[in-house]
Amino acid sequence: MKVRFLGTAAGGGLPQWNCACAGCDAARRAGVGRTQDCLAVSGDGTAWHLVNASPDLRGQLVAAPELAPGPGLRDTPIRGVLCSTAELDHTLGLITLREATSLSIYATAPVRAALEGPFPAGPILSHYTKVEWHEVVPGAWMNLPDGLMVRGVTLGAKRPRYAAGLPGEDWVVAYRIVDPVTGGVLVYAPCLAQWSEDFLRLIEHAHVVVLDGTFLHDDEMTRETDTPGRPASSMGHLPIEDTLGKLPPGIRFIYTHLNNTNPLARPGADKLDGAEVAAEGQVLEL
Ligand code: MLT
Ligand code: MN
Ligand code: ZN
Image (cartoon, rainbow, N blue to C red; front, side):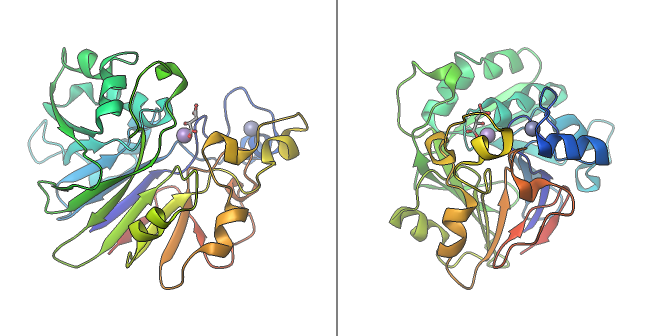
């Protein structure tokens, strides 16, 4: 299995266009930053699936040699998108894919309802391309056309603000992705609201776990902006300071979806002990 981190920032990216916090300011001055969270995975290195579709998707695709089109004029290695949430930082990029000849979208029933209703990405896309929906049933394995096997597991019921009125529980899922040829196991969990037995089972025997690194500290919004902010944990994101010490041994942990207030998102930030912070364009093979 091949993996590429297309983007590693939380909603807004780094720097965020309207933010003058220390992190955004430093990124702006250094001329480096992070684009919004998005991953690409492939079992055979020729057909790829995106996990989420960030608002920065076009730039992320153009910067990825693995995802270049060809050999035919309109051939693309991108087969579809697996949605882990319906949040705008994970779905606005769906619209960017409208030039595709066809597009598979994998989503739980509530996430699909959001993408067909209050944020009608599906109906809009269907005017431009052929959309094939695949329902992600939590716990059930799915076979991707490139040979990978994927299972979604519900991590939370936090809906996007724009979908506040919609029913359902399976709003936030993690994906466990297995390459049956190499035996490689990847877990992608960019939104982790609580540490649970279910989560520990989900990551059991994984080789790499890509984990929620939105915030380093629970009080980060207050600490880094000098204005009263909500605690990280109340926003559906356990802070790294709470998860780092609990990471089971034997697994490679890589934090992603870093908010612009997160000191670890900045260029030249200190290294973590026992885990990594994802880099833009980082590739893995497992
Ligand atoms: C989240 O990760 O909690 C959401 O993307 C928040 C947001 O961007 O509105
Ligand atoms: Mn987000
Ligand atoms: Zn900022």
